[in-house]
Length: 364
Image (cartoon, rainbow, N blue to C red; front, side, top):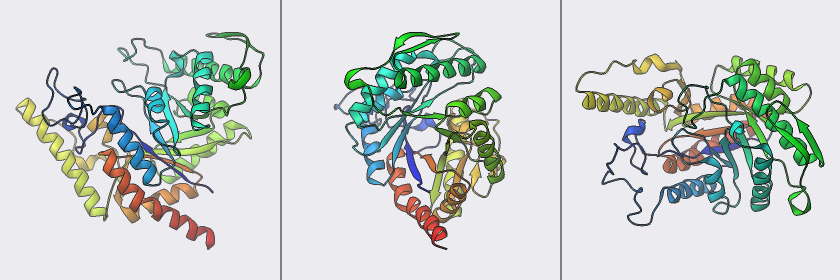
């Protein structure tokens, strides 16, 4: 089994603190109208932009031995497709996995963007089609239910695949229509981007069964992950689907050091809230988020990203991920802040341990 590791890029700021309000790398999370004196980028004061920081993180991931870069969709961050394009010629080996909402991009136009991107990068583009919670006041100014988003994404993928592979292609659906579409000349014949899908509603699972090349999971007990993998494989009805796990990761030389590092970050965030409000903040306890010896579910409470992350020493995290790999997961999308330094840490101390464990099991 070939295992791949992707490093998550920070499209909406970065820093050493767990709480994004204390980040100082870039011009995000600052009080309105106030540029912190110690912020490294933002006003172009020395020509170093936030994209220059993203390039540094990407190059660190390549040097540390990662196989790809994940670029998540955030409400107020840089556009993942643009970030991927900016990085395409900065890293020569890494695959690029931007996340975007298919429901807001015309599928024919998305296909043309993708085929040009594949020519630019010799086939290194993949897609994560993002579906949000359908809440009012969304960043894009339009709220659609998850059900409608799933339906639109399904038609989007029907058209992209048909336009890409079956020219001349005709299609008439509820949301989109194509007549005699398809590529010609040098645009034809490129590799279709690998499709990553996620979600646990019935509609999202059915969509993954029909279209996913890779289905994204988040940390959970091993039995639950095995059951989800079996379910998606059944829905795929013989079509091959790979499985990836996306997680924040806090790792140090020992379990105790990793948990203590995260606890200090949580407590520092609480002190900041108290300082700003002038009173003791009502917030859950650190330990209430602890799900197991190596999982903590408080990341969403800190900064609104993946809710459950992996916490532990290098050996513990390596053993956990190796167990996931044996269960059928062969891609791991990891992230930690500060993203630059932690890319080196995970690449130097964790990935080699995982590969060694899997090689030993294969040889036994």
